Amino acid sequence: MERTHRAFGRARLICALLAPLVGGCVTGPEEDGVPLVGLITKTEDNPFFVTMRERAVERAGELGVELRAFAGRFDGDTDAQVRAIESLLAADATGILITPSDPAALLDAVGRTRRPGVLVIALDTPFDPPDAVDGTFATDNFRAGELIGMWARGRMGAAAADARIATLDGAGTQVTVEVLRNQGFLEGFGIDIKDPDRMYDEDDPRIAGSAATMGTVEGGRAAMERLMRDDSGINVVYAINEQAAAGAYDALRALGVEDDVLVVTIDGGCEGVASVAAGEIGATAMQYPVRMASLGIEAVVEFLTTGGRPANTPGLDFHDTGVALVTDEPVPGIPSIGTERGMHECWG
Figure: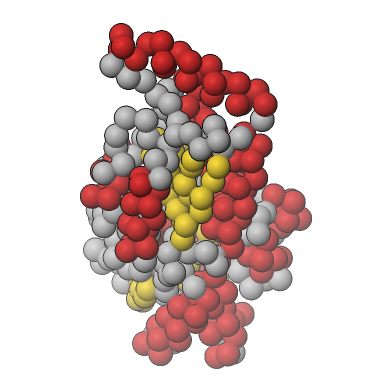
């Protein structure tokens, strides 16, 4: 931390000397010499975002920056995220890390952050266009969906040709992260997804229905109950996250059909990995929120000291933080790890 403070001090000295020549340069706000960074997550009770916040606080302390954390009351609470952005700008934050609930609805607010001396990074959920922010640290969400789709198709074998699929999505409003996961899963399963940037334009008769869950246990349970009433033959369920998957499994168990339906999802939390080990979920795609948070804080520190901005993974328009398929029933040709290893790598 001491080295970090000295680096900030050198950066400020250099800026003071060069400002008359270059018309200004990057420095952080000073409150007792400590730069301010904000973290804005979708909710404060989802284990994924809890883990992200905890690691961000830890890494900020290690690197000598102040972190202020904000969250929506629910997934989709755009108003709360806009207020958080405005609060951070008023406080002269140097860095803003955000997992946008609705990237399209936040474009105007994020646009107001694009000013000299402020670095804005998306975590987990990308913006469209990607250059609406200075960088993105996220899972390759399409690949995560594709892995569980490929696994489900391989696990079913010949029966996949007659599958009855339900997709349990987030808000169902074409938010980038849920589009990527939904479309990745369907393509992995062998569905013609038509436009990969849009959900629900597929015409494959194997898709029995889709429903919004808001990424919660209660939402997953209610969505699954409704879809099963509409089509009791559903035998494959894709859920946007492990909370929605848990709710779906509860509904299936209440109906006595939990052993007849294959459930797959994305997250990699310890509870989700335990559900895979228990046979409640067939497979999950593990994300790395700790890595996202660490890289976000480190990017702000790099920006403070050198003015540098994060680079994308080659061939992608974001920095890929990794994904791993977790299952105890591996399918040949599809890379995966078992739940024993998954329990060592999970979060939450």
